Image 1 (tube, protein in one colour):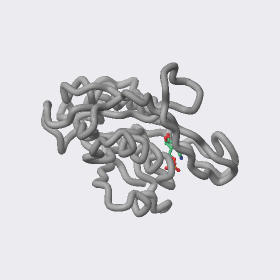
Image 2: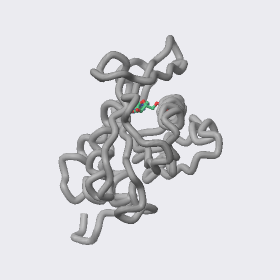
Image 3: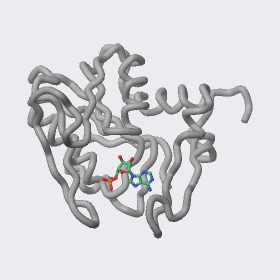
Image 4: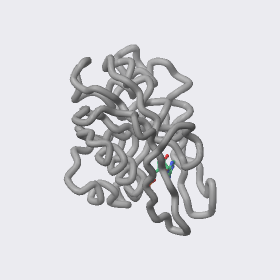
Length: 178
Ligand code: AMP
């Protein structure tokens, strides 16, 4: 890699494919090599937030768990608050919850009931968009708090799963498409 600012192609090369993790048939996209390299990590955050100058959003919401890493860094970059959207049972105060179907079973996400003031502009960040179910549920939680989801921004998009079609017209950005 040269000393120039890393590109999405550099990020694509750094993301490691782990076949059959956590179960047979899943190609797990391991983003830890991006995190381990400060230039790649900084470029990932810059690209995730490229549409949003500092001060243009009130908060960045991140999805448990890898989404937290990018969303927290993005929040500092944008001079915005950070809102964790967690798996059920982890947040200590009153919560709103949203369940969605997985291939087998369901998953539930939660947000603190007082996390946002109505009308807040929120950038929703996750590491990866696959089928889109997680992002839709997270966006729905933010909308139930009367926030405006200005964009869903993911480092990786698995385009063959057509997750972006599930987002129902929410603005969507991805940095690396597989
Ligand atoms: P989905 O709801 O199908 O869009 O799944 C997206 C969520 O599951 C994200 O929070 C990802 O961290 C995780 N995820 C799903 N598929 C993968 C994959 N192939 N590699 C890494 N993470 C994944």
